[in-house]
Each structure stands twice: as structure tokens, then as C-alpha cells.
Image 1 (tube, helix red, strand yellow):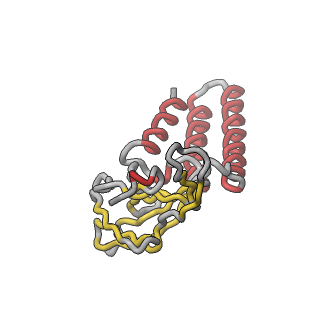
Image 2 (spheres, helix red, strand yellow; image 1 turned 45 degrees about the horizontal axis):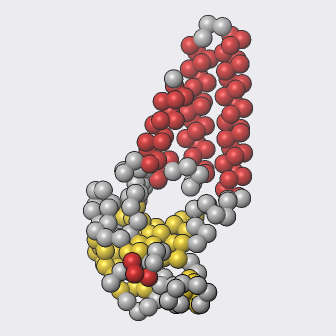
Image 3 (tube, helix red, strand yellow; image 1 turned 180 degrees about the vertical axis):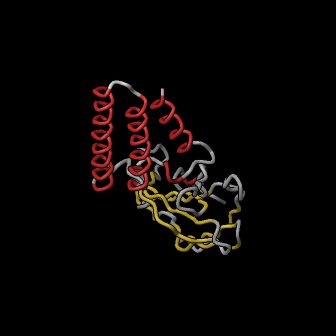
Length: 206
């Protein structure tokens, strides 16, 4: 029951609308390993102190130590050798004037996604809605009337420069010389609109 409650709590902290960055799986392996190790260590102490049977208590303590070691190894390997198609890397793009928020660029194998986060080592939160999405490389477009084989590559629109216009508005200057300003809610971190260049050309911002 304790293990199930722990897993459920971490899942809620990771994926709820107010999700905490610290608990996002394997995004920051060092923090994730510390949290998992601390939880398992407490579980081991509880088993050691709560059981009258010393043999059972030692068995639980040994299993906890084994799982912690495995968690450290898995976290290290996952950080060193991410899956090329599903790995997500993040970097900070800009910080708000008051220092409360930061714009993060999440990179996968084919796209960049921009989100707002609050700052903080333990209680930093991330909105669960993208502010913008751009492809990483050029895209193929079929100009033929019946969409057969007349493919050509067109340069994708990407973010050239990003900054906070004020504490709750992000300004994106794009490679097509256009600029967009998007506001977001300071509590929910939800943006006022979604700038999407990752879909079809017809769906791009106008």
C-alpha cells in the first residue's frame, strides 16, 4: 500500500496541471534519484523498526538497498543514452524581469516546444500547455493538385529570439521576421494562445 501511494503521489505531482518539475520522470535524473532513494530509504527504516522479525526486517532492508542501487543505475543510463525518438531535453531560453518565471525550450527529435515554468529548485512548476511549437528542420510540401509526387522542401519557421516583454507576456521573434506576443496566467501558467508551426501550413498563426 505504501508503494502504491508513493507511486500515485509522484504521478500526480508529475502530470497534474500544477505539476512540479522536480518529479518529471528522468528530466532531471539527479533529483529523481534523490526523491526515489529517500522514499525507499524511509520505507526500509519503517520495515526495520516496525517488524518484530529481525530476519524479515533485514530482508526488506536488503531489497530496499538493491532497488536504490538499480534506480541510480537506471537514472544514470537513461540520462547518458536517451531514446532518439522520445527523449526530451530542455534548456532555459529567457527569464522574466521579476525573476519568477522562465521560458523553457523542450527539444525532441523533430520539434521544439516552448513552455513557461516558475523558478525554484524543489517547488518549480511547469504549465501543461505549450506556448509555441516549431519543427527543427525543413518540411516537405506537395504542390501537385492531387498530392502525388511533386514534393519540395520549404524552410520552417523557428524562434530566432525570445524574451519576456513583461512579467506575464512572452515575445517571440521568428525567422520569418514576424513577432508574436503571448500572455500567460501567472497561477496556472496557461498561455493565452498556442502558436503552432508543427502542423499543416493552414494551421500556422495568422
